[in-house]
Length: 125
Image 1 (cartoon, one colour):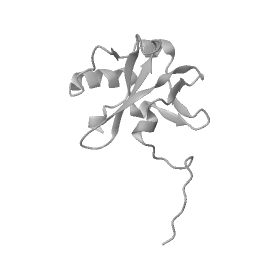
Image 2 (tube, one colour):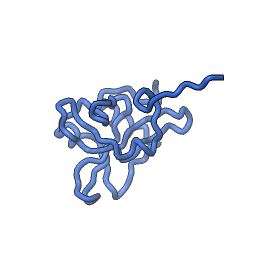
Image 3 (cartoon, helix red, strand yellow):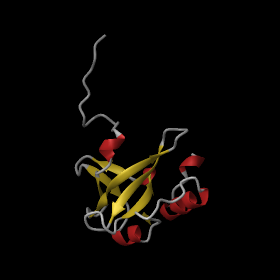
């Protein structure tokens, strides 16, 4: 059996731990923040949301934005994700802070997030 070496740049898979810390840009090239974490659907294994950290300084005042995974597009040239959002649109998006995460089982919260971004909820796909 011959094994073929696949270079890292052509491999479509990435470990979840490596996604955290990846920069996020908008389509104009502005740096918006970075991926803080990802949320996986326990039953399907699909990535539901990228949690993007935005604002704050040295972890103080940080805001966390759940962005439906389908909104992100990986750009190998930038080495980060690109989203079709302005800073103003992101600032107005559903978010939470270090005081507490949303109830991820609350479908109404998930629907509000998906409605904001104009995407179909992952549990309906």
